[in-house]
Image (cartoon, rainbow, N blue to C red; front, side, top):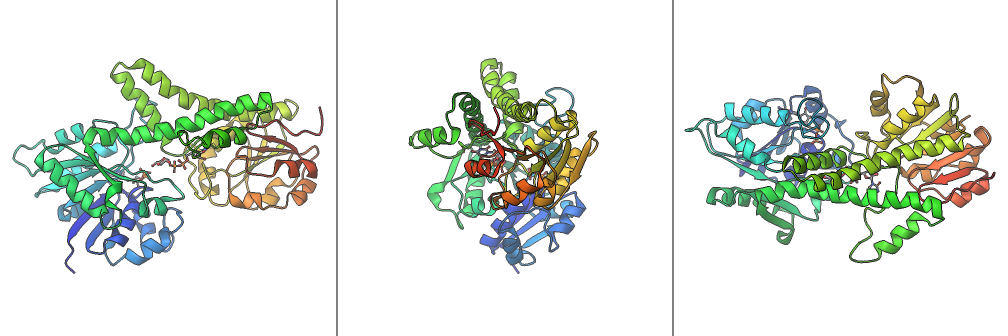
Length: 459
Ligand code: UDX
Ligand code: ADP
């Protein structure tokens, strides 16, 4: 079959896989090829067990795979055949050298740029899909145009705003799509070619065009603003616990102000996920690089407050369990960084587990999707950890339950039965404020919720 466009995506991860699956599904006239160096990942994309769990993804892949959506490890050949190359490789935080712990590690990006250069004889549009520091495109252009008489590469920025757990919904019905390019005739033409892809299913008024630097910076800024709202409400949650105000009531009251809005105001044990911390620290590093120390400190405080919220949660467990958890069985309900995903990257559960293990607690971890990742995250830590698929068994004999992920199933458990199986006095720490606290208190639990006065059966 003749395809109208040939699209390649380098990197079959959380962003590349679902994004390309939706493009292929919505645009049967394009050939969409996704490649990765990780052969196991590619095998999984070609199997019935996809490498990531995302509601709706199986159906989208089933419709397009083999028709116009292909997964393979053939990177060089893929590059040769493509008109448009999306780059969606990982950009973790640098762990070494200058900017360690903050700057983005661009080695995978740079390798990809070199691979593109080596395997290309015709002009191409290169799309930045991974989150990148502002002005990465300039570095890309320098590498790609290292051979003066070689083909022309136009670098376009098209950041992905999808959230895990709702990736397919976010891709099919996005708030906006952003495409940034150079303001030159070739730049604008490349931008239009990318806009054209999305026009197949996204209303035109939701597709925004900008200069390339604005597009790069908008992605970091969007994540920084979202995380900042969580740190803001979490800082208020600490004050609520001292003053008998209830954080969910405060959040509701301020969220009704249309200038503030209700979303992303849910107090929690802290934000996790692969983006927020990484992107903010990256923003901090960029601000510092330009000598903007005040701006850097401002954004850095969003991450510091999040770390404090995690530590505060552990302290709260420790203090209320009579200042010692050594040898006590504590059940962690949930390990994923949020519900509906098996992803545990930067999950607050990791730091909380670490903190409790340092205090020599016996941990039992349960999660409907994230146990395999939890095992890897905690491998090598000293202490007693068991993993249990059944939350009833996890709670059996425990002194305390700490709910860390807001999975629906945790709302529906039979807490009377759980209470009966636990050690006495039984404690419940709701790190997501999703349970019925009054009812749990009536059953007999001592209940500690984020941003709410505790409900205790003793003074
Ligand atoms: C985020 C952005 O939402 C998305 O646009 C971007 O492309 C990638 O980063 P994601 O990391 O998948 O997406 O998760 P998100 O739903 O934003 O949640 C991040 C963290 O914040 C989770 O740990 C979540 O539990 C926490 N959170 C979110 C809160 O604690 N309170 C809230 O009100 C919202
Ligand atoms: P994201 O959340 O940004 O999608 P992931 O880590 O889930 O990040 O996915 C990035 C993918 O990119 C990984 O599957 C990794 O193997 C792949 N990758 C990294 N470098 C290259 C490369 N040079 N060529 C092809 N794939 C790569």
